Length: 581
Image (cartoon, rainbow, N blue to C red; front, side, top):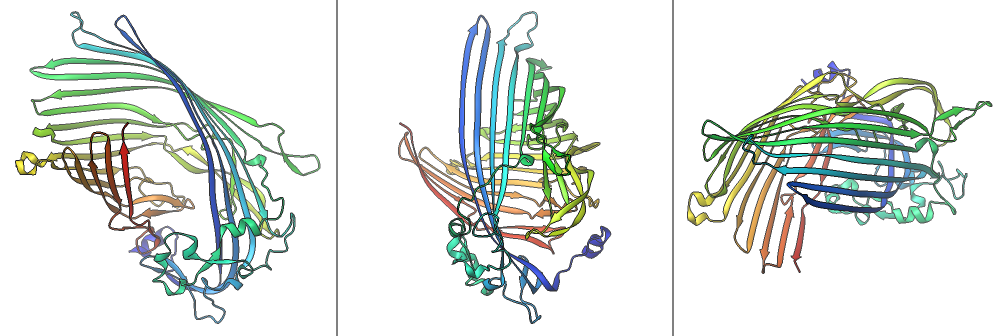
């Protein structure tokens, strides 16, 4: 069944293969960042007659600089690749040219030591003015509250990026490429470089596996005066200004002898987007350069979004709830930036799209809540959403005749590169589901169980939305699991509390590999515990245990027979104290 399903989409998966010359890579990577975050705000409250007036002016901003490095050595040797229960692995083959890929440093030749530098500046300004009033009118007794106001936000993001590679002991020198080996550098056992080395002890082929430390790479494999300059083609700046005007009213009335409440409102939103970046131009002599100043493109949209919430007390313990609304989710500033990135391995350009619109949803929900004695609750609800304008990556053009270079500077060939952009998909899709909630204190069954209880919820989804695959493989939307639930047992009294929780999420599509086939994150369940003891009203000690059963995170491509990830995050424990002075 698996083979025929894969074959239907033109994919052949080889589960155990000998290769004459597999490319093996040893990569030493380092990622460091420095963030300067600031936030200021002034809030004001007034009472003018019967009106409550609230005002806010605020700013938040962050400047983040990130440096990532990649030291690459490559070997081309015969090996055997196969799938196992914990993922794909590479082992020696019967070919006489085969080798132990983990313990043959002399076989790996230096490619480059690459350093990437990124500087991002995020700023957000906000202002809000809100008016509200409680009502008790003889002429209109149902009206209990009226609220209206306006909010303005101005968000911007500016990004600079650059790359430089050291390929020799001085600038422009390439003498290390293809001559220097991994064995020519100081090596450190992998278990001494990273946490989790104990997980390698049961794998004989990996015992003694050594690698270049990041400190050695920084000190010995960057030439004197090495630096990274920002590149104009990687720059972008994007700004989003939003004005929202809203009004809301609360009503209370009776339907027969049953009390009811109604909350209804509307929000008008006007959004303007401006995105800019340097564009490549052709010079008179045939060379290429970039515009002297950024080129800008503007876009925007306006929307009116209504909402309504209704409750009806069927009796003293049973409440009917209903809600309906129109909502939107704005695209990220990164997606609407006027920029272009390249993926040489995929022969693709990826462009930002300043014309990208939000994703919209028309949604409604209907539920029943049964309130038990001693604070218990049983609830069930059905919800449905119609989603329009889902953001997906799509082929929007082709750039012909792109020269692709190898790592050593030689020409690999001239190719046509596809251009992909995030776009709003056509059509609408339905997502529906049912949610169950239970909060039950056990004291309602026996006074001996005072302090004990359980909290639980369960959600199941059904949707017509499918993932984006160039091969037309029908998949669930990325990140959306069919089932999720959590279950928590607890005990608490005046000075002590304890909880044990189990959280479960069904399998889901993590991403679409190369825009062709889905890569799944397997179903995962995790058990956590927490304990707290209060010495007095001011001091409390806590102990938390995360993933105490040491569950593995697993992933696979198309089918569990082809695992792609088998990862341990380990158990984590935290001991804390909280004091109030």
